[in-house]
Image (cartoon, rainbow, N blue to C red; front, top):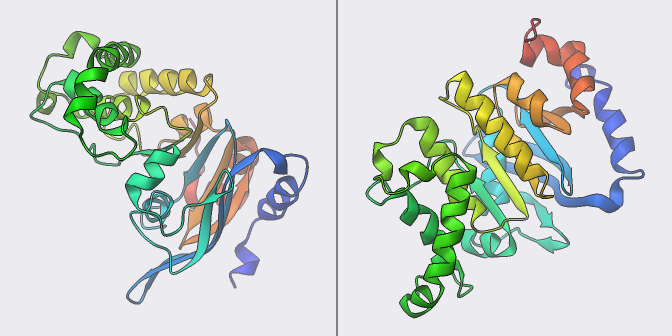
Length: 274
């Protein structure tokens, strides 16, 4: 029954991945399986992400999207399968080890330090990283503080939060908290950025500003995986789209291919498009 529901896009994508773009693939998820008790969250997931591109993962709630990101960053260990980034296996590594390799994540619920200022929030990850361990070293912190402060102010300017940089982070709106968390990732100079619903809870104006920001980041060559329910965001940013349902990738291809696939349109995007 599962085979009859699998769109032809799955076969198209397989041919593309095995063809001329294979040398550009930087992230590989091979046969990833993950269960929680009797619930199978991920079932033989295969996903390959091209360097410098934005790869969107869409699907209904409970499809396994956030679980997949948790596997990528070491918060969850798969039951089987492996994750490889730029030739280095990530499976079994701890989150701080994966972050040191150059993989960063923006969470669905912003993870910030609400009692600190915006500037301190952005500086803290960089201060903790500079000794290579993500443990806070006060001696190295003092030596690097001015350089990191300048960079943090610049990043806050890029995301539109420089004027509020002295404010306590807990007083920000939800949308601004998400931009702050993104700033905390950007100062780490990740090669791969994972974003879990980066525009959730934002008004359309803030959503469009975030789209513009992520486009600017793309110009720097950063590879991104985005989980997003807002199709305006997905089709504004994605170079490739994969559809995850019931723990399986059921379709994958160029945005226009996925948009026009009847099964995907009916089951995940709805029949009306913006």
